[in-house]
Length: 412
Image (cartoon, rainbow, N blue to C red; front, top):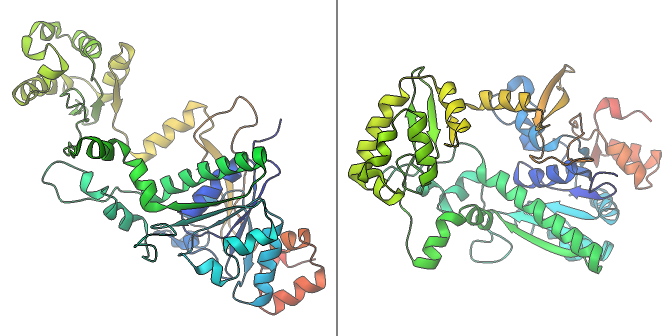
């Protein structure tokens, strides 16, 4: 077999994170993704405190492994014509400009559909292509605020706080990839192209389903619970251990509580009526008593010991790790979550690292497989040749500033 999207071609006009993360999944599944950048490249190439990596910032690598890059000035007529020729060769167009920008460039949905009626065209924006907020600019932290995400973190009474990574961007990109896959399946089964309108705000509310639905159904907002799970169980919380590490318990069922009590050497808790059921244990006065007792017990062993012991008896427990420790654990798992990648920095230095794969495993021909990250315009000449441009045309457009390519890609 081949990868699921082998043979599909994507014209990716998106930049920064949400759009590129969508096409990242399509590339992981085998699609050929042509990343259309302006002549200076995606701003994400120089994102974060990594000056040595400017041009190939880790955040850029995360969402662009294995893509092909062409650098095009879309505001020039010949650049727009190149883009249209590319669109006509593609199954999918992806963009995340503010609403109306692609249409002004001559690359809106109706304009592109005229070039290829079976096209799947996906637009990602902050608030969607319709509605009163349509023209508002948005980035991840703004939508974290407007979606209710910020106000849901922490304990009751805490000020709103941002989730510490671009949760909105990454989830929006993932949801957009699902939408593109669905539209491709729909087209291949029934023969029609499709326009997809993905909103970062809509995607965020989907991500917040477990919080939003109680309000929509019962008219009630769930309280903020900090590190305690929404079950309210005192054994769905975080405890300090002997070595200074923390463990997170997820003991929310009566059988799990019984396993916990026996494992920690406190079977007498099972005979205490205050702790007889989930409801009893969740009463405030009983919660405090139980957590105080557990705190003493968990302080008697190292966190890793508790993690092994409790999970072995069916009492869910996880050691609170930082990202570095989680990556090391993934590296040792053998599940192909981390894939090797070679990165050439603008200085010419080459370095080897890893990137995060799709997060699921196929028995064969699954996601992943790419090993490099494109420089700005690295594949301009290659892609243009595939679109039947000859060498003279390519050289003239390079000389005229219509397209760009790094020096090593300028040779014919």
